[in-house]
Length: 200
Image 1: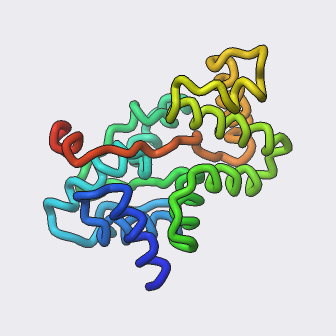
Image 2: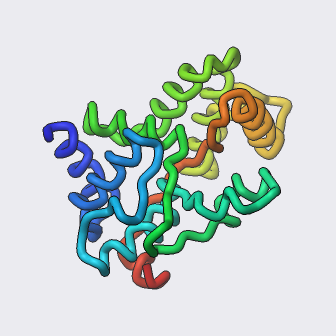
């Protein structure tokens, strides 16, 4: 219960205006099992319809029911090709990196994508984990501060930002093929107004 409360507090701060208690319960269960079904979401019907859309938008859960039906692995792994439906029979999986993010938040009360990536790379035994983590940190630094000339330049002075991102994607794809992982995603932070505009 104490761990769940820590997760609730984190989600309250990150997603103001949302029902943090229900969101925490859903994410905690999905983190433990790796997935959650529509029937396992215990709340009122309105919230139950909105949660799969919210967690999809924030890259926390991904519908898997139709992924099995397609013959293309590349399509089945793409977020944009797996549109969520909030209805009975649907199942939503949690990418490995997000599992680490949620479990760490439960244990420490901190929302730390960097720690989640680090733990994931350690779990799969990535031989170049330090290099990949530094690239990830550099990308996040530049996303948060586009005018920064920090980490990315220090690590790859002769490489463009685009090529560094491509290297991270290629390395992760290799890791994915070894352990059937999921692509690394940094959940987006949004304001309640954005949710209203998107009718979520």
